[in-house]
Image 1 (cartoon, rainbow, N blue to C red):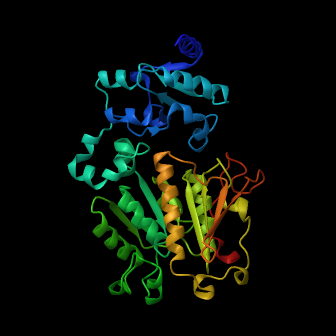
Image 2 (tube, helix red, strand yellow):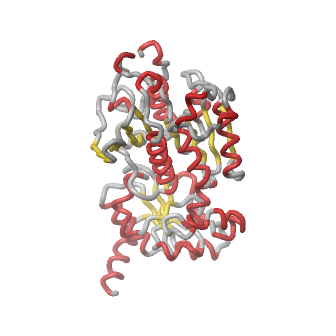
Image 3 (cartoon, rainbow, N blue to C red):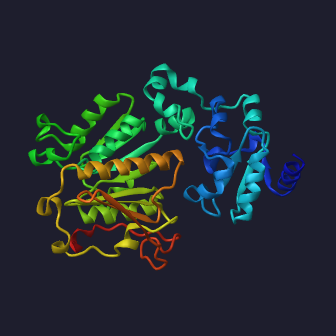
Length: 377
């Protein structure tokens, strides 16, 4: 105990502590460093739950060295020690909430708790709420999140359904195509009766049946340099379920401009890939593939074929990565490319480095201009 007090006093002597009335939750990454069993009493709105002893390993996916970070615990002790440790690791703008959540609550400030979800939502998301890594605070974060799904086809279908089932409160479905009979072998958002209907509208109808608490926005347009930023703005993350290279490159560049993470997925015959492109925190799509290949080197599903269940596997992985990003749990596939072989039922994850000379993400101060790559593909 004496050693703990010595460490605490040394930490408090050099870190920044902010009073509750000075705390700005909207402009900082807020992290609850309490243990999972302590979260039941409530949490600060929008906080990421990471126990203080795990913080050093998991902070990289949430904040850079110059990102404002606000830590809190029960009374402000563990958060002070954690703040000092982060400073030692090079994080320059870390603060601890004085008095912790107990002082915050004593002063009548807002928190998120199970009772605020309502009986129906507590029942619907009960298996989430009992998970220490999610809890009521995490579920509330999902409910208050918005995700854009680019492509309501093979990848977007399972991703949309699992995100809706998980309680992501706002989904935007972006697809200018219409349901065709050949889609039904793998695109589970759609039914035979939907043939001829826009995929955005068909998908919205399916999701509404699955979870009426989800707000669905449809966009039956193809992303272009003229509309991408407007359509994708104000979303927390994006699913890349597109089936063409021009859209993938455009989406990559728009995400860098908007600083919105993209969870990429692709399928080809019996193989699939998943990665997370977190703007300026890891490589982007152009770091992997600087320029589109020629059309003969990149056949689409209609030309090459795709195993019907494969998009379900990859799309579900994409939904998993989205939920991890929104909740601030686990280790996202930032800087890693996961490949899946359905015939061998095997996976391989390879490390991908950020290209310092990348024309898209190499200069954070100058994000790329949007252009339509159609003429290059």
